[in-house]
Image (cartoon, rainbow, N blue to C red; front, side):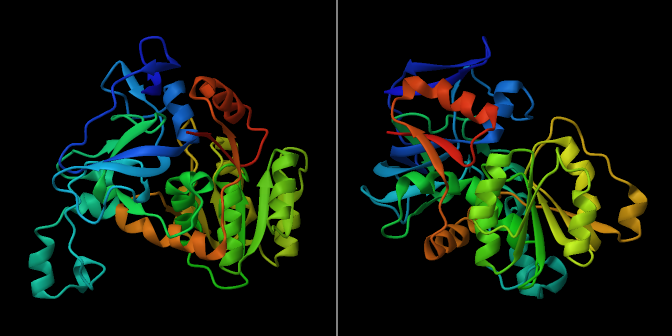
Length: 364
């Protein structure tokens, strides 16, 4: 089969002929319908990610949908022909108990004994698995920009009936992340939320925020992405590069500032200016991964000027809710696609240019 692979020796993506993989005991083999590109894939190419490929050539991509064509001996809940999607991290131990308590301090004695047999890391993110077996598709294990790919079945789900495979592919990273970024802010209907970076993740976050009946402010440096943000329901939109006084205007029009600012941009400048649009004790939600470490004023946090939170695609337990929510509310990724894997560089160039809102992918 053909696969788009990042060659670590020459630092570029190339299309190679490789064998169709054989599923291991916990694997499902997927004939891919669509694979989409994420900004973190670009970070791999730039060398700005901590997840380094252990092989010379790794198939890229961690967002996909497709059809199950074979299953491993331990696989449960899937059959050949199922239409599926999967999260970006596989092979963690996934040793979790389904308990009613939400933290150790609220557990009964029996619950505490059960907790001793579960993986604390897997409760937060599969990459924190205590056994150290979690692997990121497209980084430390092969990804989905190929005609066929593997996924740990515990990391996958069958799509709701009738859900479009192409626009759904990005939801398994961008969608799950954007949904939880908005939801975990814990805002009330009518509260103001600012989406900083209205592109690949941002256009999804705006749709989730609107479905949750929040009032949306879109901030970006691209007028085309801001136009798209407005069409999706953002009440206020600002080009932070061309309008110096946008922060003051936001505070005036929202009577104090946004209740939360979700930073989806990978720009350090976006993070340094985000607190300026927040009302007192507002939430700075960290999602975008900039090249440099963030700088914060410790006194601001100590005095409660604003709070800092984070969210990610995380664990399989966080997957189903946003996918089903998206289907229920008609939330879809705006997709620019190509149908030849040999043209992979075209979508890489489009994403790096950052001039078009939405996601980029290959339809197989």
